[in-house]
Image (cartoon, helix red, strand yellow):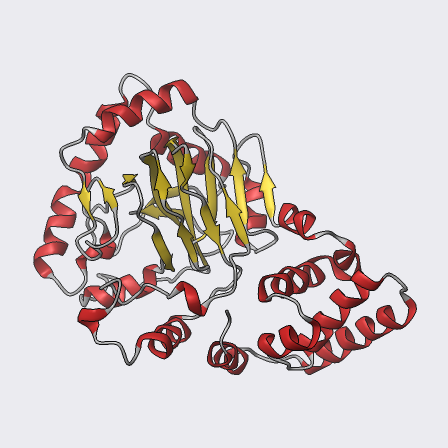
Length: 373
């Protein structure tokens, strides 16, 4: 459920365009007055009330609609105008997902610009090879849970940059092990091309300014990990934000850091569980300060030792509406989405769920893409 505090903070942070709001309210009112179909009128009235400053809880009480439906309808209207209100909820989900047969620059640009929430590329990597690689990776001795979130049942190969928070020793280990970890995953896939290497090569080829490994401290960063999700554990709602990770490290970049406009999460699925393991993505993309306020509002009075998860970046599911999208990945599929949007993975049963992943940073269409883990 979206709480009043969360929505109030988000409203205060937005640059409000009153002219645009007035225009939208007038358009919606005209649609309501002239359109006889009751369900579509209800959608238009709900979106109109959002623009008029009503909180989701108030609209839920007035119209008896769920926050997730409100979110769908508002998104659909903003992207497709009045036509979007004529779409069914399942059709709205479809327009928020782009399915492509291969990785293309135009699709990547549309995703980066927020035209849709998720880009899916089925059969990106051959399923037969994916399954063979997953069996080898499950036996990998370097697999262990994230050191910063040991209470979450997700194991990874290689220390990630996220885990180096305020620890010079961890940062040193991260850089020392980065190239070893990259080569180890490559060797596991030999004689086949690693899924991560395939993605890195294609990014270099389709993005005109090129693509390369990110550089913060003039040392080679890790670019790609394997993740194994243990049965009956969820990856709780959270955001992945590189700018926050850099601040958490406590050591400034070796050169002026050009921050990202968008950070993508790229995941290639090698094995999926018989049930569960769905990827959830919310349209919500709180700023760093707003995300902290959400967590503080919900958990501020709960002592750290008594919290379900020790990592401070976890967002309580009870403070959120239903996820905008819920996706069941397929073996061999590549899925990309904005990692700044709140996202999670539902618990697996009869797994494990095995994937390879890395982040992709976008600064502008005139600058190279970068990737790291």
